[in-house]
Structure formats: C-alpha cells, structure tokens
Image (cartoon, rainbow, N blue to C red; front, side):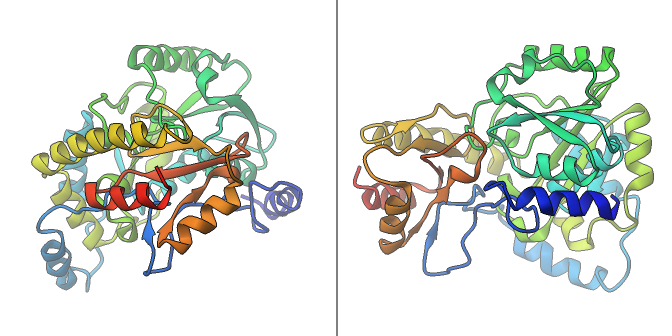
Length: 348
C-alpha cells in the first residue's frame, strides 16, 4: 500500500462515522474487567488443556517456529475439508483478509463489499487505493461480479448473523471465477454452525480464525485457504514465521477438540433461541445462525440503552458503526447464567 492510499483513507474517514481518525472500524470488546462483556462474539469457554499447551510451547518459543507449520496446517485442513498445502497460516483472521486483498486488489480497482458487515473489508480495500462498492448483504450473491476484481462475502454475516445457502454461495463462486473475479469468503463464525466450508474451491480465498470458536482472541491464530494463482500469491506474500509457536500449538490442539466444538454448537443454538425469544418481547431481533444477535432499539435511544446496561455491569456492542444501521445493538450469546444477567439488565 502506498502513502497516497493511506492519506486518502484518513481524509475519507474524517467525513465517515463508520471509521475513526485512522480509518479503523470500531469493534466489540471491553477492557473494563468489571463488566460482563457481550460486545465481543468470542466463546466464553476454551478447550480443556489450552493453558497447558500454551505453557508447554514456551520453551519452543525461544526459537523461531518451523515455517512450514505442518501440524497446524494438517489439523486446520481436516477441519475445513481441504488439502494442507492450501492452508496459509496468519496471525489471526484479519491478517488473512488483508493478505488476500493486498495480493489481489490494485489502485483503481472495484470490489464488491456487503453492508452492513465487518468494517475492515472497506478499510483494507481503500488501503490498496481501490474503491468498495457496497451491496446489501442479503443481495450480494445475486450481484454481477463483472468488472470487479474481488467480491467479499461474510458467512455468517456480521452483524446480522445469517448463513448463506451453500448451493447459492457455490454458484456465486463459480460466476466470479468465470469473470476472473476473486471471491473472498470470511468464515470467522462458520465453525459455530454445521454448514460446510467453501475452502479449497477454485477461485475462492477463505479467511478463517480460531479466535471466535475457541475463545482465544489474544493468541492471534488464523489462516487463509486458496488454490491456483491465489495460493501462490498468498504463499509468496506471507511473512516468514507468520504464526507464533504457541499459536500454532494451540491451533493444532483446538482443532482436535471435536467434543468441545459439538458442545459449543449445541449450547449456542439453545441459548441463542432462548435469548431471541426473550429479546423479541421488547426489540425487533434479526434471525441468526451465529453466536450473536442483532436487534433494533425503538423504545429508548441506543445511548440510553448502552448506558443503562453499563450501569448494571453489562457491555453491549453499539451497532450504529455498521453501515446502514442507525438504531441497533448487537449482543453475544454466552453461557446460560451470563445470558440471564443480560436479560435482567435489559428488562426482558
């Protein structure tokens, strides 16, 4: 990315409420340890043995990690159903997104971007000197990829939560390939569902993260999956030692925890349905396949709701920073007891 692109992004951000002064999109997560955090969509539980694996990796961290990351790539490939050689390790899912955009998009290009959705897509596109063309997230699979260098899909979409139909997504991927358009699919939350990954399909770059499903955002574990020219570009551009030794060891461990994944999916589905039923008595709640719920606030202002929840020890995600949302809040799905505290704080 060139200095002109960075300066254009900063200038743009001064007039756009969806970004801060540095062009960064606001995200969930509270640093206040006194608050129960419903603003970040990470699993409140971690796989058994994670602390032991992390501690055991300390000795290995005294040396550079083996840059081929074979054990991590093998377990990640088994999880998503691709060939290990197609897995490109990164320090978190966002780095995989940046790497995909950086190696594909050039100044002056146009990129199809869903809205409302994860704000970093537009930021990364603009950092390359390109322009995002925003499309309603529910209509992105019906878009014409012609004349666009890349199309982005978030599956399930953040912050609305819906998964895309697998057949329609594959058909859109094939149309993109026919027109020479790279399809970037962000599957950060797909592990919470039983939907199949599109990883390994020709013309598609998938970005994955272990942050959400395994509740370890501070470890920075992620990867991209690609094939053909896209894989060559990603592999060449990837920084050496792109994942730390503890992150690789934890990733290998987490992806072998089948019971943990199954329990997480069951808990999230049960608690999400319960939360949605209760929240719907006061708010207009979006349907969701993800570990979070988006709802519209109509009886009070969003600021008042956020403030009241904070006074009662709860941090919520102000969803007004998402493009197209002006009176919305997003909440994570946590444990039964924690969710009860949320419902009590919201008077539902």
